Structures are given as structure tokens and as C-alpha cells.
Image 1 (cartoon, protein in one colour):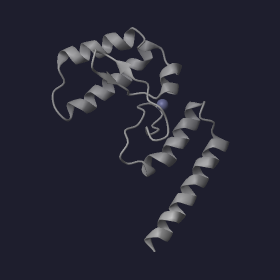
Image 2 (cartoon, protein in one colour):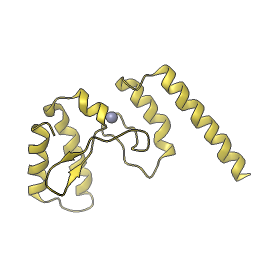
Image 3 (cartoon, rainbow, N blue to C red):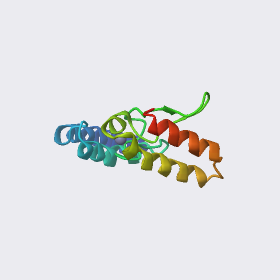
Image 4 (cartoon, rainbow, N blue to C red):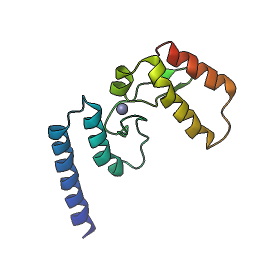
Length: 121
Ligand SMILES: [Zn+2]
């Protein structure tokens, strides 16, 4: 019974993803958001792009190194490419606010991330 439900859900998900690709091309933000609406519930363990909402299970995050040992990726590669450094900043600030829910974020990290973003990393 569980297997039958799981396989049915899988078929529905695959069909929905296929339709999403037909109706909304992933090169457009609207298309990516449609794909996100379908794939996000199927990937609850994954973080998502702060702009289009697609989980990292279905797209690649753009990694922004902000120190020798640390990097962060609030945007997918496609969303990152579509935005200017200034337009990207709010998504990094959103990520920092998320981190702060788990504890204070050191000021050097905030400064280093802002610098890296504005340098186009
Ligand atoms: Zn994205």
C-alpha cells in the first residue's frame, strides 16, 4: 500500500516536472518558480535558492567564497547570473538573517560576504 502510494506520487511528480519543463522553461524566472513549486515539497531536506525557490536537489547553487575556508550559496547559478552584484545583496542578507535564527553571526562574516558579493564573487 505504502509502496503503491509512493510510486503513484513519483509518477505524478515526474509528470508534473515534465509539464513544468514544457510550460515554463527553466531559463525564465517564472519557469524556475513553477519548477520550485513542484520540486520543493519533494525535497524537504534541501535548502533552496532565495530567488526562484528551487531546491539544491534540482539545481546548482552559486558558491560565493568569502574567506579562505568559507563560502555560501543563497542563489542558484542561473539567478546569480541574471542579477548585478547590488541586486544580489538582499539575497545574501536574507541568508544571514536565516543564520542568525541559529545564533549570532560574527560581524567579520557579514562584512566579508558583503565585500565578496560586491566584488562579483
Ligand atoms: Zn534561483
